[in-house]
Length: 414
Image (cartoon, rainbow, N blue to C red; front, side):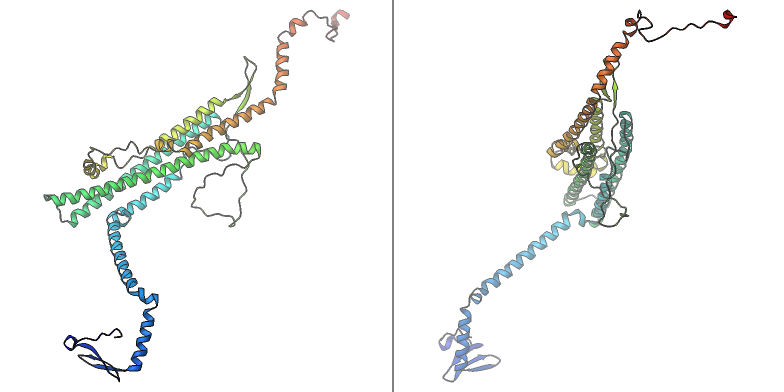
């Protein structure tokens, strides 16, 4: 109303126009008219022009259009993201959601197992250590096999539920001949289930990797505790495990460290043939026992079957494999041992375990050096014993400090 323009009479818009006179300005519409005095109109016009000179009002129209565009784009993207999440995020699918949560619970139980077990405050001989690990391997293998069976059963049920829901939603009966579009939609569901099974395999592998790393860390912490006991240096912290029990002590109160107990028993024996002091069992025997334990641990974590290439789930994965030009999905790369062997930190951890064992036997050898002087004297004495009878066979009794006494029988005296 302040940006007015003088026009010819025939150009006037009869539904909305202004007139100006010496008295003031009048606004006419089809419904009513409004009058302003000339002084008031000029004052308002001056204020309006000053407001337009403010940068905010100069950019307001551009800002408003930009905000409307930004809101529209954001709403469009949110709508598309919501649709994509509902179609692709397995946690939003009711049948797959419960399966993933249950599988995650089973994976947490797996991570709490021990691939290499040690009883508290017990020192093991080599034979006892081998027997303990054999018992542990049998128990853990049985538990991992049970975990694999449960996870496969849950995945088969989840896949059946998804396919059944799809068939019911599309009103496809068992004897119904599916059209091309229906078959394409079914193959899309199978591709989704293939991705779901691949995710399940990733969760399983992640759980077994955590189990392996934690077990190796525990073994290293136990071996390093002996060195810390000898040198007085702090031992590396043991891996933290979650427990369901409540702490009976006061909150914030640190529990006292348990007294140190040697984990492996090594006796120092003298070789009868060479008269040398040897550690029994020796370093090679314990090194071989640890290598067997670690290799068997890596073998055990391969017990859970891979879901992607399993025969019980083949009906849901064959279609997607054919789309990729394969007969079946290959699971050779889903190997825990291969994944861990390519990890530099895990290789360093494995090396540290055997370094700790080497240092422990170096400490044993240093301890054996304490007995070297006594062993030397003993060896010299043992060497003289063999010639003792020959040396003093002809020596007189007086030389030996022995006096011969002859006792006369009483019968002779009487």
